[in-house]
Length: 373
Image (cartoon, rainbow, N blue to C red; front, side, top):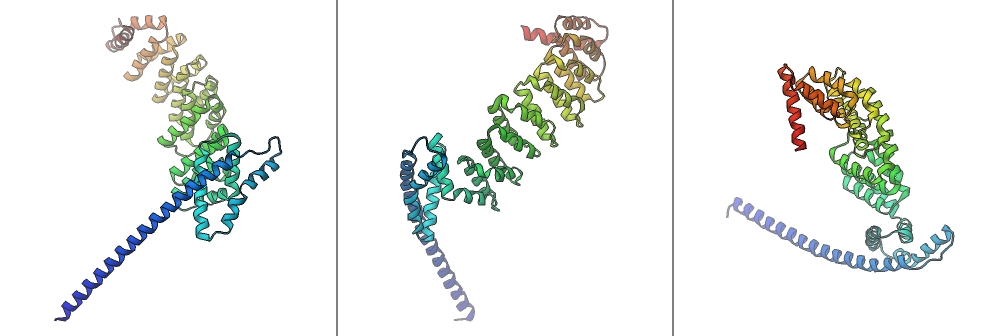
């Protein structure tokens, strides 16, 4: 037999042996993992029943907080004693089961039972464990820890969660935001909006749901956000102030529409004034109709269309006669919403010799008649 054949045979035997060893190792690992999984499930069921009883046991009423906490701690004596005598690996497994049980219970409890659960979570050192995970290099561990701290109402973690609002991963930032809302309520809007940068569409959606839940309580924080340096935050605040219909926001929005250093933001604030429908903004809108920036003129025209301003008829008539076609058409629509005086002006324009003017007026009159039909 040649040397080459001997080498090939040896390699084949070696490869077969390697495959057998790997397959055997995988099988052993699979069996071991199945056993660990069953053990974790048994422990979860055991501790679910145990802590359900502990959470429902009566405590003395009318006692001071320190006495109540001592009673809470006494309920844990037996469990902690058992853990203290357990080997490290077994202790870790039991602690993981206890932590999972307490977190799962958190969504169904309130009042004294929730206070007791929070104490249990703190007493076992789980709050410190979760806070430590907030520094993990793995974003999913940071996000999970942020979520769990919110579920357990861990007020001591507020500062760390606030710092996560600037995390590099969006899911971590979102979980930190949601947890701060649970911990601080409407006051969470200040740190959330202050630290927000380049708000994405998804974050904007999440934030809008939070703001709408707080209703009028959110107003001061949204007004404050109009002065924040990040333009995406300012745009978000403008949108929410107009959507929620806070008429007290008219004057702050007028300031933004008149003096903010970015034209896009000014145009957005101008449109928001129209959505609020407050006549206090009319004078400003009249000035903006003569602004050199087309986007501001267009926003002011749309705002007047929403408000329906009889006093704006003269200046809208002027805007209908000159400028780009889109602006002239928008001015005509605003006239149609300005009461009988505006409609009379449109009918007169419908008989003009200027073909463009006549076409614009007739087009809008046809729209109005169609709406009214």
